Length: 189
Image (tube, rainbow, N blue to C red; front, side, top):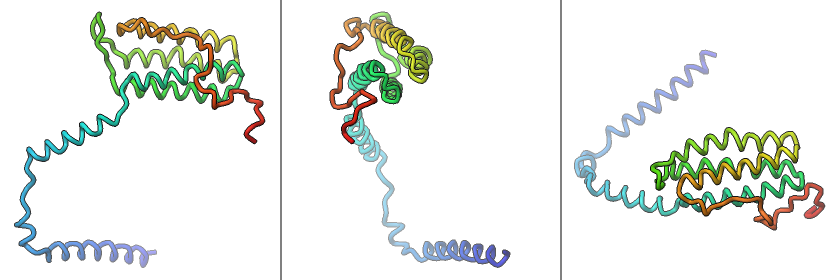
């Protein structure tokens, strides 16, 4: 066992010594000739890169549209008692809500600043938790109540941020017709 340990130590120290020796043989002219980067140019480069990356990130309304999509499909998954699909859509809703408040944790409203992160946490811990419980227990009536309570909580937030015209409802049709919510579906095989 000590032979293996000694061999490992020999390899590690040998590699370290070789690296030091290689660095010591580096031509001085290259080290001296390199200029330190211009701090102003580096700041400008980083600002341009930040602007480029910010342009790639969706805005909060885009993320909330995704949340609404999942909320609508959640209704139909539960209506068909496809509880695994309902659980999937609820997970996507939770993820989208957290994403939305990472984009914009507060919002200005006619009444002042609204703490969206706090509201989202409350909805996740109450209404979303009731939805999850109903889904896991396969209780349709409890799901319907929790769904309606979630819509009321969403609307309260919409009103708080000065957007009372964003009024959620039980969806009249699925947002996605490609996903079959029927848990007994036979196609595709």
